[in-house]
Length: 228
Image (cartoon, rainbow, N blue to C red; front, side, top):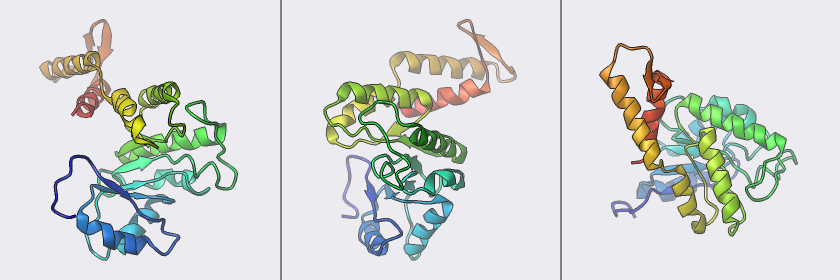
C-alpha cells in the first residue's frame, strides 16, 4: 500500500505492451509508489515512451526494460534514452529470449552462452553504459548450482555489469556478495580518489607502480557507490 515503509527496493513487472493488461497493471501498482517498473519485451525508447503514455500523466518511476525477449529487441539496445531518467536500469533477458524465433538458444546454468545470445549480452552492456544507466545481467536458471552461479556473478562483475537478476531467493546472497566491493577494492578506490584530489591539475599520476588518470577516478567513484 502507498505510504507504508518498505525494507527493500521494489520493482514490479507489468505485462508487455503487446497485450491488453499493461494499463490495468499501471493503474494497480503506481499508487503503491514502486521503486521501478520492469517492462518485458521492451523495444528501444519507443517502448519506454509508450509505457509512460499509458500512465495518463501519473509519474512513472525508473523503468527496467528487458533487453532480448523479442528478435528485434537486441538490435534496438542503442535506442535507450540517455541519463538516469526513465530508463533506470537495462536488463538482459535470458529464458524467454532462448525461445523467441529460435535465435537465442543458450546452455543451462552458468556455462557459456551460445554465440548469438552472447552478442545480445554485449549489446545490452554497451547500451546501458552509453545511456548512463545500470546494466543488469541475466539469471542463472538452476537454483542449486551455486558454483555455476558464483562463476557467472564473477564474470558479470568483471565484464562491467552493475548487478544481475535472481531466479530464486536462494541466489540473492551470492549475487550480493559478488557485486559488493571487497575491502581491498574499497581501499584502492579511496587511494585513487585521494591521490587525484591532491593533484587536481595533474593529467596522470603514479600510484603503487601504476599510472592513474580520470578514467580510474570514475571507476573508483563507481566502486565506492556500489558499497553504499
